[in-house]
Amino acid sequence: MTLPNMKVLSLWRNPLCGIWRICNTSAVLKQMSPDLVMVIQGSILISFCGLISAWVGRIRYCSYIPMVFSISNVRKYRYPALADYLWSILYRAASSYITIDTEQALRLRQNNRRALVAVVDNYVPKCEPPRNKHDAKATLRIPANKKVLTIIGRIVFPHKCQDWIFRELKDDPFLADKFVLFVGNGADAPTLQAMLTPDLQDRFGIIGWKNDLCDVYSSTDVLLIPSKIEGVPLVMLEALSYGIPVVGTDQDGMRSWLPAQWRFTWGDRNGFKSSVEHALSVTSQDVWKNITERLSIVHDENRFAAQFSKALRSYCRD
Image (tube, rainbow, N blue to C red):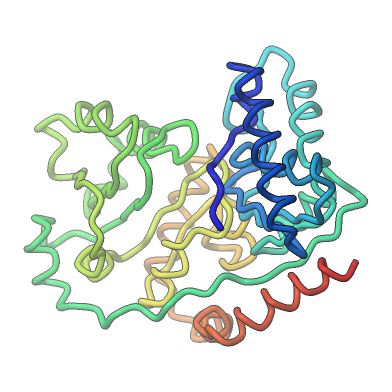
């Protein structure tokens, strides 16, 4: 049964409504009498009230959470250390977690030392074969003679940092033989579109979200992930499956998956450019051997089902 998503913010905006929803959801769960409630959370705020509902009903529960971060990384606060401490308290609402990466597991344990944390790599289906690069570029109206650096994801500046890429590169000779393609929709998409003035169209392009990304990947020479926070980005795994190198910030799933030369400290312009140049020139088969071996794990649906079931069963018994 799927229950309505309830964010912790509803408790602040409308406490009476929030409490009513928690009590109502708790009553529904008690009537169902499940062995375990799994609360699916993109971040700790999403469906947080579901954790409280299970706790109120004294029903065994766990959180499935793919992204763990400090709130000061995405919002500015007058007292960031205090904000991070208060944010960390939210992670104590559950004693059992399932997450998708060792970096996320480490952060969970830092926020909740008593928590049980199971790591289950995501399952990602194999991608369809790539298309002809020249034809794919023509379809997307990308200059045929340039290397394509692509950013795929929600266009939300505080999180995904597309604006940082634009500001750092718009006047840089680094893009003389390169083209940056933004793919996605989001709250900041109109702003980004307005930033891409006609005189920059030979260096930057933007297209909305596409359900079929095969042309995008087929055109791409390097995938960029300049985000301040991530879990294990699906686009990273898809790009690697296509044999496309990925340059990302030195954190989260990127730290687990990418070689050091493809990672950079967020905000380090020169480090970013160096990583891109390395990714474009890499010829070492050892790099791809390690990545290919790990991809074989995430492409294994049976492995995912077995590991996920094992984690759930362990929380039912504990």
